[in-house]
Every structure is written in C-alpha cells, then in structure tokens.
Length: 308
Ligand SMILES: Nc1ncnc2c1ncn2[C@@H]1O[C@H](COP(=O)(O)OP(=O)(O)OP(=O)(O)O)[C@@H](O)[C@H]1O
Image 1: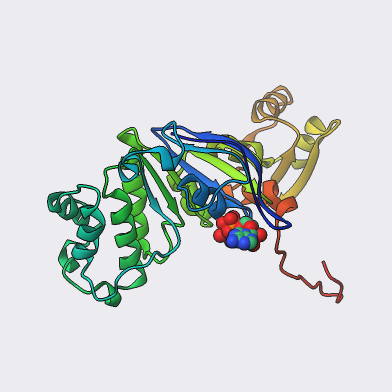
Image 2: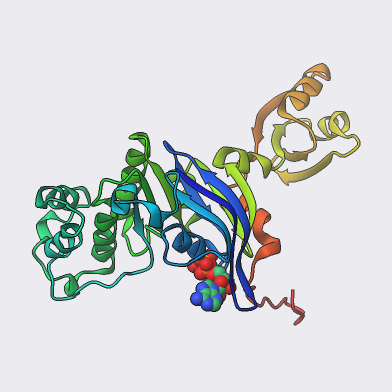
C-alpha cells in the first residue's frame, strides 16, 4: 500500500510536486504517468526517503519509509540507474546489498533466477548491457521479498522479450497481493500491464482512474456501414449529432449510441452491415488528458510558416 497525502516538494521557486493525494492498493499494477517534469520521480524519491517533502506525507505500508525497521522487506525500488561496483559480479553485488539486511545467498540465487540472470551471475557488472543492468536493478528491488514494488521506467533498455517478461513478472507480483507501482512513458506497454493509473501534470493530480474507464471516457464515434447512406443520415440526424462519411458506405456517427443507431435503422428498414464503436487508444486518451500540462512543448511549424 502506498499513501500520499497533500504531498508537496519545492526546489527554490520551482514546485515539483504540488499537493498530491492518492493511494495505491495492493493486488493490481498501477501505472504512474505524466509528461516530462510532471513530478513522478520526485514523488517516488520522497516515498523512499531520498527527498524530504516540503509538506504533506508519503507512506509505504502505513508508515513513512524511514520508520520501517526492515525497509527492504517493505518496498523494493528501481529508480534511475544506481551506483554499482563495475568490477563485481551480479551475484556479489546482490550478496553485498543483502548482507546488511540478513538476506541469504539462497534468496540471491532465487532472485537471479527470477530476473533471468543466472547464466551471467558471475560476470562483471561493468560489462552488462543496458537490459541486463535493468534486470539487475529489478533483482535488487525484489531481494527483500517486499510487499510493495515501485519501479521508475522498468521497461527502459529491455528488448521485446524482456518487455514481455517484465509484464508477466509485474502482473504475477500483483496477483500475489503485492502493491505494484510503475512509471513509464510507453503508453502501449501501460495499456497491457497496468489496470489502474495515476496521471500527474505539473506536480498535480490529473486523474486517478482505471485504464478501462480512461479509454472509455475518450471514446470516439460509431462506424456504421450501410447500402442506404442518405436514408440513414436522415434518421440519425438530430441535435448534437455529427455524421461524417468516411467512404465505402461507412459513416462516423458521434452523439448516438450503438443501440440508438440500430433501433432507428431497424424502424426505418435500413440494413446495417457494420456497427462498430471506435475506441481511443490509451495513448490518445492520455494525450487528451494531459495536453494542458505538458511542460516542454516541441515547436511545430505549419506549412504556412506559422507556429502551429
Ligand atoms: N533536485 C532538483 N532541483 C531542482 N529542480 C528539480 C530537482 N529535481 C527535480 N526538479 C524539477 O522538478 C520537476 C519535476 O521533476 P521530476 O524529475 O520529478 O519529473 P518526472 O515526472 O519524473 O519527469 P520525467 O518524465 O522527465 O522523468 C521538473 O521541473 C524538474 O526540473
């Protein structure tokens, strides 16, 4: 369980996190989304005591991180690349971290196996690829068998096989009843991995929503295919209804439900060959939600030479 209440962090004049309140429940994977500079890393750092809040509270499993007697067993974290001794093997790296927390070499070997590093466990960490380094970071996070797992951009550097692996790993951890909180900029990946989302922009909460509800809220029109286009337009027209022909006898209808369209077509004896609600992708839904709070806009120039 992660609980953040009225959490604020200022760096001089810059407010990185601005009165955030949310909680992350066990048993599901929750994604942490927001444009660059939205305050995600700062929030995660405060949750593990690497930064002190200016005001408000950040709790893990009921207490601030620093008040836990065995924090490694409460929360496993992967933040931006941490210092590793390049001459050490992956196994020795984990043994060194575990040693101060009463973690056995048996657990170290178990975790190496979980992250797929058993075969390279004795190789020097300095020669690891980005993806192997990422797996090692995840191994560190899992070492204490923690109840809560929090990973900043876990997919970074992983190849498609690695991405599939981490998706299954995170879902498995959640299915065991753990709290799993992950940030990512890869929206397609979030759509496949997370069930719930916390979306922030400019340090503030924009949405605390299930993936399904967010996609639903950004639903598009309905595609309707018929052989009697003009007759169908007549029966569907009305206040607040927008109908656009997309070619091939297909109309895009905004402002009427599939049920309404089917009932009106049936009453008028108009055959329908297709009736498909157009779903937005998570990426489209997210872009709509956050467009106001993007801190760093790329410059776009239109064909007429004006800034778009
Ligand atoms: N130590 C610091 N000193 C000053 N400003 C900081 C510091 N750390 C973060 N910031 C600022 O606070 C804001 C939030 O940064 P943060 O790294 O938390 O965002 P983020 O959502 O993780 O971004 P990204 O997606 O780019 O990783 C940014 O404007 C950043 O420049």
